[in-house]
Length: 241
Image (cartoon, rainbow, N blue to C red):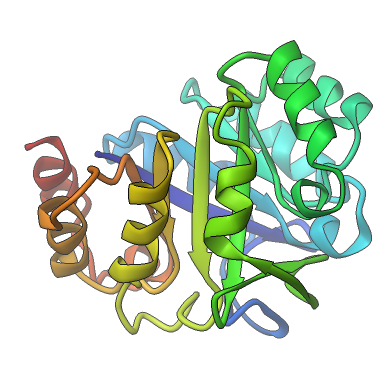
């Protein structure tokens, strides 16, 4: 299992939100590049970066912060937030992003996701952000009428590299990962699934690894890392078992 430390960008700073609410932020580092360097030093092999402002506005906002991260570390970076056109995808990949995460556009224009996956093999992921079992869009401000598993199945043969399944109700709350929901998606498709939202302790990683069914490919770590609830060395050792 790959562990992805999260760097959520708002107004150029590294923050964590509660339940995706932009008004409920905690600033953990004024320098996202320094935070990325710290995660690399701790032994992580990937970074998960989200442009929170961009997710709401539908365009890249924290460009300077993302660029600084790319310059600071040698780790592959997956980036999401407001990326909704082929031109935007191409710009970020040319800038050095290893994997682009498409969320809102996956609901509104699934054909664009399929085209992107053909153009950039293994570099496109779909972000499935769940609220009450339904997919949320537009920086989690809107809730669609599409179920989580239904959206996942739309991309079964598209060639996307991964599905990132986030439980909005648990995100930033450290109340425990939604193993059942993530597992339901993993069992429904052949695409690698990454769990996100609510990871509070090593126990959450253990539950993801030991669940019956299709293995969970990865897990995103946010507030639990920043607040010291998860020891990076212990988590990485467990994930590698």
